[in-house]
Length: 307
Image 1 (cartoon, rainbow, N blue to C red):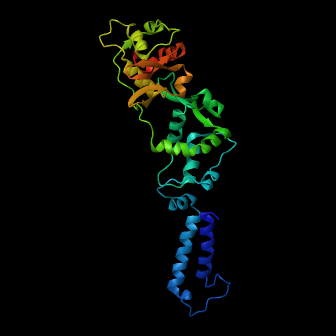
Image 2: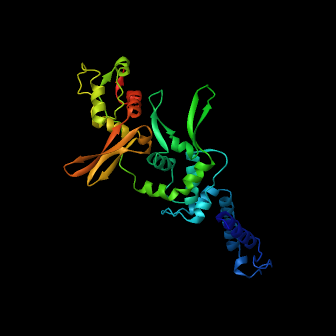
Image 3: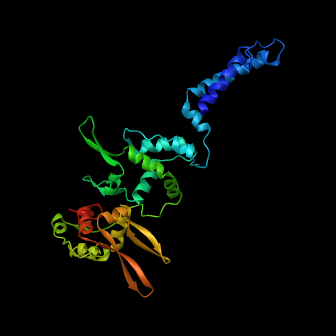
């Protein structure tokens, strides 16, 4: 029996008491009984009215039963609807939130952050120089796709949609998503400020190496395109922070040191890991294949000024 059904059942008892009927056997309540007194009958009528309002406001009822802790039980998972009709991440997050019934609202950002971290979504720069989320090939394979629609003014808009399989996938991994949300990795939330300018012609002349390059080598090549620029050029750290912001790199701790290494999305565009020997043994380094170099060159206008 659901909470709404329980409230409706309780209301049926209160209604009978307010009408002077014993709800246990439907007999008339004697005039001298305490339940027949006018003030008591008035209370029954008031309670019945309140319960009636609750049954017509399911969201209010759901909020009454919210608890601080998020408990993911088999019953909660079973109550999360996965529909044949594709839905937005926000819509699916609302279903999860209603099932969890926690005072801590579950949001689409929690799903998106986990999908980004696992390489199912990536951030790209669109033609308006805006950062947008798009499914990787890995994301497409589980049922994430881009839905396009046209507004009344003729503008085409794009948004992420989840088909039935993607909804089921997220529901099946909800425990991991909740754990990730509790302890998210510390990534660069803001784009670094870079004071460096190139012309479109200079950027177009940037060479792409078939030999994988380090982030320092790429930053040096881009900086050398404009030797007259009075700034210090493009710093490798700023370039790496930008890639972290896009979800292509993330910070990994190894042996007490932090390294910026490719996420699944970063690996897909051609960022690889090579183990190198140092004074303290092996350590990882991210290298950029021709595909990854081309991605950086094609999208660097989001980090530096290109005129």
